[in-house]
Length: 255
Image (tube, rainbow, N blue to C red; front, side):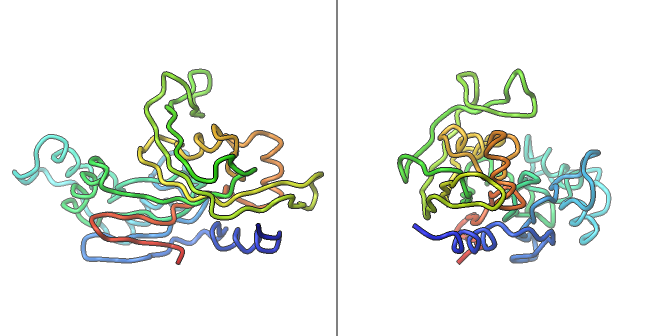
């Protein structure tokens, strides 16, 4: 168990509030970046300010979509080859409120290769989250179907009609009875390592809510009372993609 000063140090380390895109590693055909909180990955009418996609387009000037596709690409790979120019190398995404590692392709061949790796579940990602409360079991799996809620199209939830979703988790630190300025009472928190084995939208956020330990600062899934507590504690949602593994290569934010 750690004290409240250690909690603030953990928040600053794992969940920074700066909004600068940082390159973690760059190669001839791809790069890995640390996406800051508050930055949208893909271009959208609703997106305000610089997106990661816009950052890539300005940095590398990919040009216009070609009229032909190499013969070696068929079916989905053929579609994905052409999608490279539409998506400016965006292989996968993170929620606006989530920070952390993103892998980006710099040419269509690498784009197709990386999408295939994601499709065949060869990519392993590790997230870290600060949650309200402490899970009853400090290590385990959450195997619960996730889908979009029929009565609220913005939110997802666990229900029988959802798609199969599996997340492994492990508590790596706990803080008990922490007093927060401006909030009545004392609160428990845990830092949790999470490994999704499926890629459902909002999977980790929904699974932590399902476990009874929602993520601090999660406006969709933490509930009104705990959201107020979370906002007093820290000025962002406390979820980060801290480690990615692809084809034997490993990239980390934290040592």
